[in-house]
Image (cartoon, rainbow, N blue to C red):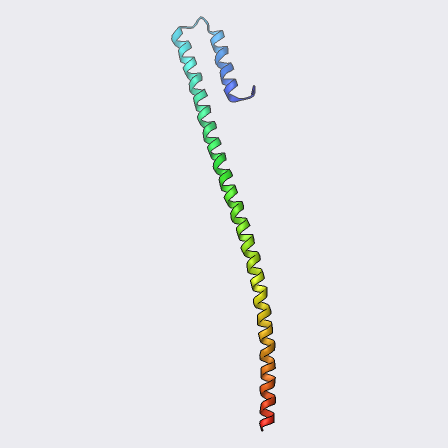
Length: 110
């Protein structure tokens, strides 16, 4: 795109070349070398940015996978907890009933 740093650097280098067409060839070569160095630097930075973006996407996918796994585990644990609470409630009911029957049996045997 026209607004890219690479395009801007190229345009500036070309303007420098056009303005200084009377410059010595070594100065022109230096200007071209500087421009190429800037372009290479920008390309390296772009590659590093793209690598980081890829790594971040990978991490985000992993986080989403782990979140789904945790949600599933939490739902399973909630179901298991509800079943255990129901079993405890039932056991408590039978324990109370057993104590009443024991008390009734003791009264009958006295």
